[in-house]
Image (cartoon, rainbow, N blue to C red; front, side, top):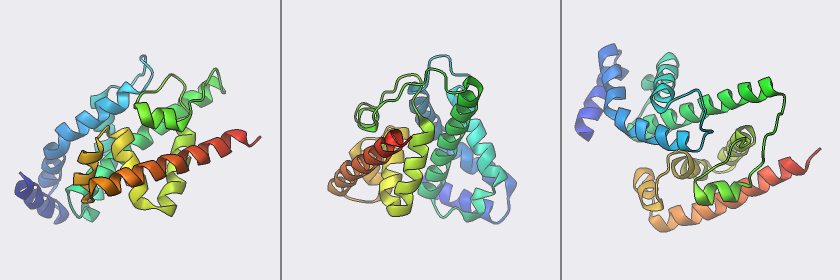
Length: 191
């Protein structure tokens, strides 16, 4: 299957639109699995469904011609994961702006990351900003957080995808959670 993906990716990078569509079809099941996990942490009455989230992310990636810069399956998977995350952040910002703050409830990042469950009103904007800062400091830790938190992957699954040892993944997971927690806590304490 990986060789089929590689062949389709090469054809897509050469400008074959049908091959680009096929590349997305090849990772569709994985993306749907990730989207379902992401949507579990959303409020029950969310207007987006997992399939709609995947469709929007794929359209976004196609519009940005991400295929032209895609080096491998991992790169495309990370780009799609980030696109879905950004769609949810944008959706949360829109909803938050409509409510003008409303009854948003803050949940500590360590609770979110340890339990993979969230409550209504999670401050996704703060999490997104903290992830951006973490990415500037340590891109590998940001990617690991995205796979673990947004993708719902285990330490072992994440280590395989990122081609690092499980011990490194576990160490990065601990450090990244602490950094995110500190960044979000600092944002909450500022007036």
